[in-house]
Amino acid sequence: MIPRRRLPRDEYVEGVLRGDRTILSRAITLIESLHTEDIELAQDVLEQCLPYSGDSIRVGITGVPGVGKSSLIEVLGMYLTGTRAEKVAVLAVDPSSQVSRGSILGDKTRMEALANDERAFIRPSPSGGSLGGVARRTRETMLLCEAAGYRNVLVETVGVGQSETAVRSMVDFFLLLMLAGAGDELQGMKRGIVEMTDLIAFNKADGNNRVKAEAARREYESALHLFSASGTGWTPRVITCSARAREGIAEIWDAVVEHNAWLTSTGQLASFRQEQAKRWMYELIEQSLRDEFMQHAGVREKLASYEQDVLAGRLSPFRAARRLIEIYTENP
Image 1: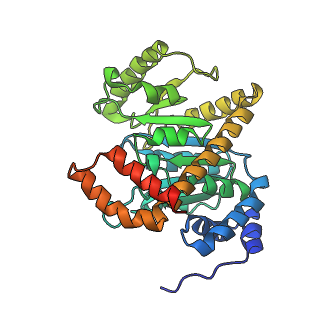
Image 2: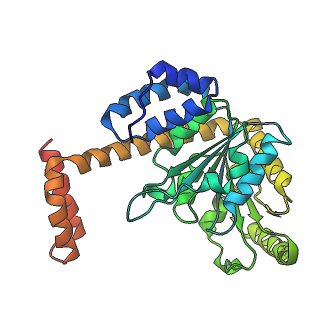
C-alpha cells in the first residue's frame, strides 16, 4: 500500500481547528507514528494546537472485559450528541496482539451508530503493550480532539489492572463499570480502584438481573462509607444502569457534570489540569529515555545475551541492568 502523503504543518493545524474529522484522524496518525521524520512535524502540530485545548470534560471509563463498556459508551455518546446536542470524542484503547503487535481495532464496529454520528469522533488506538493498557499517545490524541472542538472526551481502557492509574492521571472523572454477581464480591473489592473512582455503575441492570444489580448497588454504597473521604471532597456514588434498556444514562452524565461543576467552583479543576500536565511531562521523559536506551548500539548488542544469562540464573537481574546502564552512560 502506498503511504499517504504528509501534509504541511499548517494544513494539519487548520484542519484540526475547524473540526475536520479526516484531518483530525490524519493528525492523530502522525503523532502515533514512530518514524523519525514524523516526530518533529507531530510536535510542531501539537504545539500549535495546545492553546486551543483543555476546555473539555475528560472522563475515564474502565471495567473488566465483558462488563459492556463499549455498549454503554455508545449509548452515552448518543445521549450527548442527541439529547444534549454536544460533540463527543471516544478514545478507545484496543488490546494489541502479543504475537503480531497488531490491534483488533473493533470499536468502530461495536459502536456503529455512534461512529456515523457527525457530532462524534471515535478513535481506536492500539495499546501496543504500553503501561496500563493506555495507548502510547492517548494524551496527545485528547489534546487534538479538544482543539477540534470536542468538549466531551471519553477514554475507554482495555480493562481492570494498571490501566486505572494511567487513566486516572489524565482525566477529571473516573467511572468504574461493574456487573452484579460476576465474581466481584464485596470482600474482594479493590481498595485502590475504589479510592480512584468518582462513580460506580452496575451495568446490565435489566430483566432478571435488575433485582440483583440493585442489591449490589446497596451493598457497595454502604461499603463506600468504610473508605476515607476523597481528597477533592466529592463523595463517590453507586448507581445501576443498562445500555440495552438505555436506563441510568442521564444519571451517569448528571454525575459527571455535577462533579465538573464541583471541581470548578472549588478551584480544583485547574489543579487537576496542572497535575495532568506535569505527569505528562514526566511520562514523556521516561518514555524518551527508555527509547534512547533501547536504541543504543552497545545496549542492543548485549541485551539479548544478558537476558539469556538472567533466564538461566547465571546473572542477577540487578547486575544485568547495572551493566547495561553502564554501557549506555559510558559510551554515549
